[in-house]
Image (cartoon, rainbow, N blue to C red; front, side, top):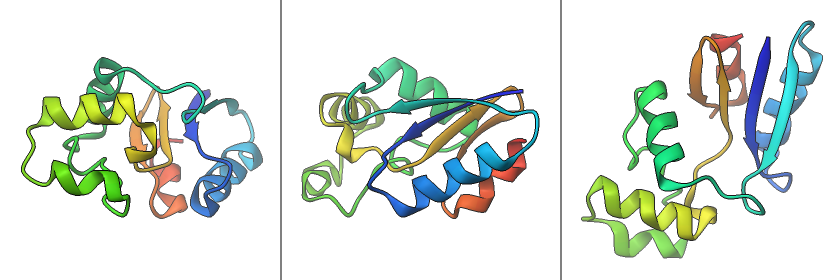
Amino acid sequence: MKATIWHNPRCSTSRATLAILRETAGVEVEVIEYLAHPPSAETLAALYARARISPREGLRTKEAAAKPLAGADDATILAAMAADPILIERPLVETVKGVRLCRPAERVREIL
């Protein structure tokens, strides 16, 4: 099984999720450091749809740049995330079984 993780190596939850993926037999892991290689708004929309969460639920609200998005619509939030990927809550993991925002890290097991 292939798993793609949108990863921030400075984030402890992202590192823990990656460790679970690497320790799971039969999982081929693709790591995308999304701060260096941000996904498009369209890619994010598709990931959130598969995860059954809204773009607002995928927004990292702890970031100062998220405050102006308080009343924004989904398209505006997605465009802001694509332009400033620090706004993307992490880690996102995709497999053939679905997509999860892995907070806590153990949520990744739901799609393995």
